[in-house]
Image 1: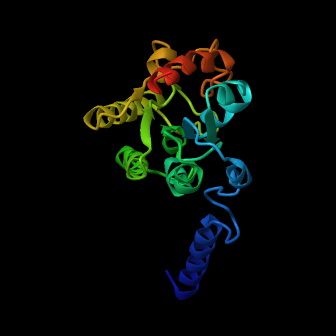
Image 2 (image 1 turned 30 degrees about the vertical axis):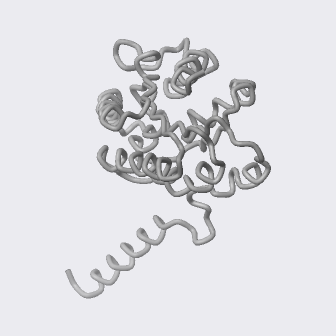
Length: 224
């Protein structure tokens, strides 16, 4: 390859790298999403639900569930466990709940912020649990809800198997550390690991009927 071609290739590589970077003014972890709402909280909540769109949508599908049970929703659509870990202090620790309920992993497996191994997904979840315990907050871990395909990332294969593998890792960590584990997956999944239509509108996210299955499982873990 001559010098001119080397220079062209170098500039092209640099352009690709630059386009992949986050804009300097971007709120990557979305600290701003709940900042104003956090300021308004004056009473200690029973629990904060930390998660992605599966948690975020819950507040819209069944909004009465949250105030009725003194639970606060802090889910953000599209987020991975890395983003949740970064905003954990603002959206969980500073609210001083009795419990934090962590539901993470779907968007990690979908590579929303790039590839991350199952071990590192679990590592982020472990870090959130350790932060909670250090601040006298009781962690509760949840299984990833079922799916066989991510509609926004159809290139990801063996989705049901990947979810099953991660769930087993989360469950084993919970058992080893005496952390309550809420098994949404077993309550919702079809025989092939799919999310049945009666519980999900798109094969990934619960509808109201799905949340109504999940709610008593969660309340049981919270002692209600």
